Amino acid sequence: MAYWLIKSEPDEFSWDDLVATKARGEPWSGVRNHQAKNNLMAMKVGDRAFFYHSKTGLEIVGIAEVKRTAYPDPMAPSSSPWMACDFIAIEPLPSPVPLKVIKKDPALAEMVLVKNARLSVQPVTDEEWAHICELGAPTET
DNA sequence: GCCAACGTTGGC
DNA sequence: GCCAACGTTGGC
Image (cartoon, rainbow, N blue to C red; front, side):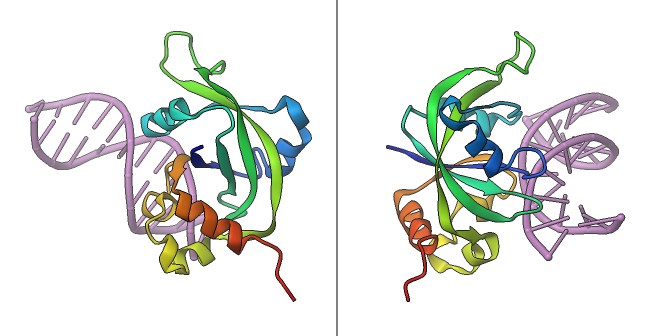
């Protein structure tokens, strides 16, 4: 299984909005960048993705899953190459992981989120995935 | 609201 | 095919 990270401005479409779609899921459309599009096309059903709030949230808030692999973006002209995927919400991170924590963490210095902040659909390595899941786990007392 | 970083466009 | 100009994204 592969891991990804998808970004959204919470003002446009938030984690709560994704949760509200329940099992129906949400078409991830509107991607207009070829690198991001290529990542969408590489996704398989069951792949997991961190849901990141950009601009006003600046943290990873939850885990989503690919429900439907890439298909032509319904919001784009029919002759265009743009693609969409469908995602469903799996679970929130008990403790959201802020960008500034990610930036400070040497284990995450190579993350695409750090290296190429503007890419809206990006791959995440197994190591990065596991590490962020730990950071997002409930705090033990 | 500002500006840096990045991608895209278009003139040459 | 290069590169300057421009538009957009996203962190601060």
